Image 1 (cartoon, rainbow, N blue to C red):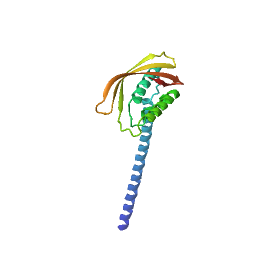
Image 2 (image 1 turned 60 degrees about the vertical axis):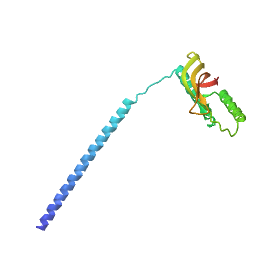
Image 3 (image 1 turned 135 degrees about the vertical axis):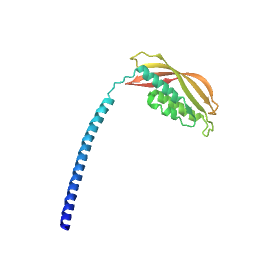
Image 4 (image 1 turned 90 degrees about the horizontal axis):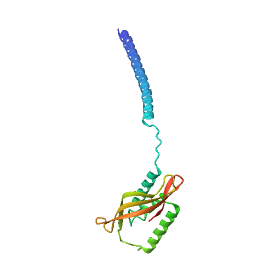
Length: 182
């Protein structure tokens, strides 16, 4: 009788093992098919979601954006920042304007006190950008930028005045650069 039990238990164990392996095979095959379907679906979705656009920005838009950002950055400063506002704008300047800016900074450093405790702050908020001289296809432009200028020693009590800056821009290759500011 023990021999019969051992044979029956062995057969049941063998059948359960075979059934378990078959179940694993079927589940694995379904997951692999599902993964392939998901990959195809996601690739199709990516192609649908990311069509290529040829966005063209006009020279007027480039000039306006450059002028606004340039003035806002270069004219907002604190005298403790070592002219980082000017240095950050070097890529947007022509070589002649860079030279002019370096000379201005050096002159300021020579004439200022080395241990100045002054905390002069100036912030500029651009209100308007007007193209004074520009025709589509030109390589030069003249722009007037109207700003609110907040300035003073105490950042909690700043004075306010309206200021207008004039920028001369030139197109070098496909990029617009600031050539002069006054």
